[in-house]
Structure formats: C-alpha cells, structure tokens
Image (tube, rainbow, N blue to C red; front, side):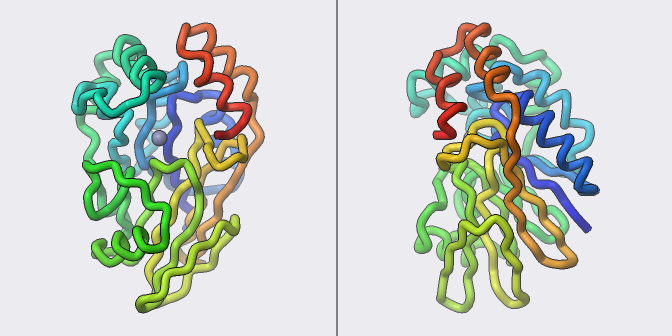
Length: 241
Ligand code: ZN
C-alpha cells in the first residue's frame, strides 16, 4: 500500500495544495504528517484545516509547539520568533488546541514517526551525519523511522554496524536492515532545490520515494509579504535554502 508522508508544511498552502493534488493523482491511500504544520508561512490555519481530518497520524514539530505555547521562543532566530508570534496571534482556538494535543512520537503501522529524532524527540536534534543516524536507528525499536526537521531529504541505511547514506530520489529497502529517512519539506525546502517535497512510502514493495514538485512560489512569497512577515522568509522560498 502506498502512503504519503508529509513534513514541515510551515504554513505554505500553495506548496501543500500542489502536494495534495499529486498525492491524490499517485493514489496514496493514507497521509501522515511529521510536524511543523506552521511557522514561517502565511497560511497556518488553511494548512491545518486542509489536512487535519485526513491524517492517519501526526506528531508535533518545534514550530507547532512554539505557536501554541508548549515551548518558549528562546532558541529561535529573530525571523522565526517573529513568525511564531504572528502565527500564535493568527491561529484559531481550534487549531491551537489541535497543535497542543499532538504527540511527540508515534508508532504508526510498525514505523516510528517523530519530528526531530527518535532517541530524544524533545531535544530537537538534527540527524544529518552517519554517526548520528546510527545512534538514532539503534535507539529506535522499529526498523523504519521517518523524521523531518532538517528540511534536508535523504535516506540512511544501517546494515549491522555499517551506515550508508543516499540522496537518491528512490531507495529500495532490504529485509533485515534499518532505515531512517529524512523526509523532504513541503513548504520550506533547504537543500537548494526549491520545489515542494514529500515522501511516498510503499510498504509492500518496501520503497522510499522522495517526490519533488514545482508549485506557485510567487504566490507563497506574496502571501508572506502581505502578512507583514519578515521579507527573508519570502525570499528563501525561491532559493530553496
Ligand atoms: Zn521545520
């Protein structure tokens, strides 16, 4: 069965709508979200409203937690902090409650879902090096773990003690190995590829496919400017960084 794994939507409804259209066209039966529904982008309510009823599972991201008052803004950079305050003021009470109720980590169909890292989900670690990935995979009871947070897509494979890393768009999993997949960001890619992204997971063929999609970036940038959010948050969308 084909599943769509979303992460780091960041209030970007233009990227999300393009992503949802592709998911429907590809016939993925279930959707899950790894958090950061909001933060940076100008359409936080629209993004939550679009997916909340259809998600089979979801976890909280650090921007979600900041926007609904579960964590403090102390370690956010100034633009992120401004966007978080704006998001708090903009969210409907229902959506604040939705973000407050999100778990940190979920076991979904035998797969671990977490925003940052399975070992310490509340510490907001980025899993970017093979050493970090090995530690995280060994501390995770499940053999497949999907994470977001870095906005830097790739697939780590652990075979015994050997970790390999792939940035190939499509990876075929093998029995007996462990996988940690950095899922692409829907709404704010940072890997130099400005296209929206999500992961298609086929749990019968055991494949991980990083999908990237052109979307209406000028529209998303205009929304951010019109909302009075920091201009850099609009500009970075066209760079994908
Ligand atoms: Zn994020």
